[in-house]
Length: 313
Image 1 (cartoon, rainbow, N blue to C red):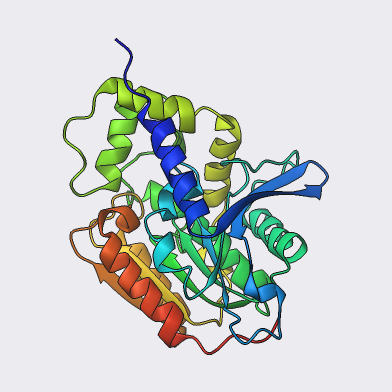
Image 2 (cartoon, one colour):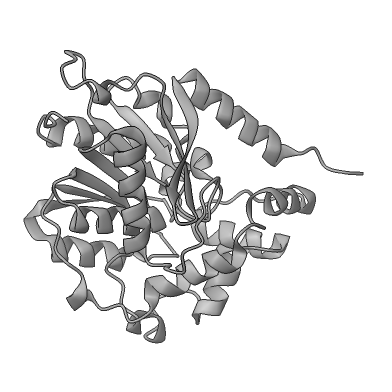
């Protein structure tokens, strides 16, 4: 007997909630085979620099897993009253893809910058990046400092080095094993990802539900996503990581098994006084889903109170 299509139904609910929050789904062709999808405000105030009620632009970048709606859907309604919120799908996720061969986060960052600037008229923003999305956010802050006022990095191992895997920092022995978990193609691999991502994962999930999620969310652009994972680690050294100057909030789960907390401390040391580290207890890598209230409280407080008023676009 076939399982209820939970994934498609959940996806529809998130789509409905985004629309109800005043967002619309837009696709922008950047040329040369690159297309990016983004949820954007139906009536953005940032396009009208003379508006008295102009709100700062806030860009939310997702990590590996489902599309962007799943990672920010439960937080969106708490943010749209204070910000013009933009939620893009990164390349090879959701409705975004490219024919280009570049798999670096620097290329992702350039594409997001073009999407926001050319497609939506956003020239000044605040950035939030979860896990892989934080790699892209960090690269945007480094490449385009005039665009990024400040950023929130959640469980983002941007300070890792290629040697960390050989030194046993991670729970997985090599990149192939990491890719097989982050890009699960079987229910057992998805269960393993859940165990690594959550302190208290759901105990009993029918295999048909997991297979359904894989079919809907994990079967497109598998090879391209594997190349994204490989590119993150290849030749990576902390000494080559630029020091961004924007105010930065670092949020980490104290029991993160994908990017261990040591990487959070390392990032704080790297950025020095420009950064604040918040550690959320009894939380794993998916801290935005496991501890949503705490995640939102720290993120919103920083975005509203710790950053200076935005410059006019």
